[in-house]
Length: 344
Image (cartoon, rainbow, N blue to C red; front, side, top):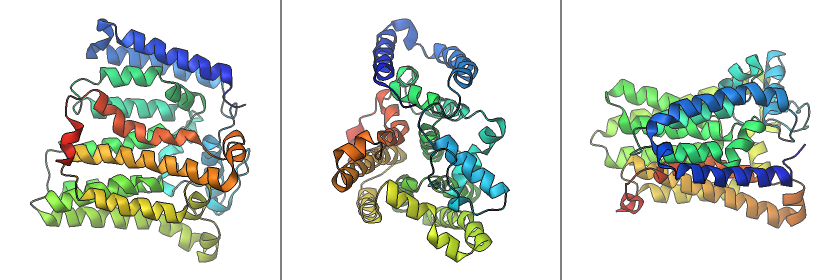
């Protein structure tokens, strides 16, 4: 089943109802976020699996987790497996499935977007003057309702990457071990979705260009690259270079999301933007902007290649990828910082 027009309308009504509630002064108090978020989580965990079990909607992210993990545990090449309900090959990178494994074991995929909400709230509390506004908008927004009902992973992944950036901003003991550990974590997160090369490049350039200790930036960059490569090696050596070249996440993503040529162009523009980023705030902001641009280019490319009817009405183009940029841009709703100052 797909998200129908009545459900879309209901989501819009819920969203504007949330805005009305947010305008009520009592709900703007940050102390109310925790109990509301806890109640929201408990209700979602109790109701969604019972009313909308995985597979109710025609969204295959949970199916890809099942397909990849089943194949891997059976000793088969996981990227060569076909989805049990969708017939697609897994397109996500290896660490994506590592993060999803606890939810696979418990068969509680609704926990993925809910965990993303908690990560977002905990990580932005210090960044924002108060993060109540964005949290309430998040809880009442149609896109997060969609994420929860379909057990999707997009917000979850991006919330983790945004939190990773904020750790660099607020980390206190910034010695060599901090940069090594942060770099390793960055390599792991980069190994979830290829598009996260954007925040990695921006942060790396900011560290190198504006840090007084260049060696820390170099150590950080080496940690990211080595970790990223090591996570792919088991698939290349375990099942052979032929299997890897035939089907791999880079190939699948370039076919169904964004072509290699356009992604290469985005990387070049990202590098150019990196020269103007002077702090983590600007890295977060421009990461959100360029992820948004990636989604726009994906829509345009698929429309030009397959036509409007095939791209949109046959669901070849997935507009939910725009959720990728939400955790990077939404915190600026709550902060009094001048975004324009990031470029000065």
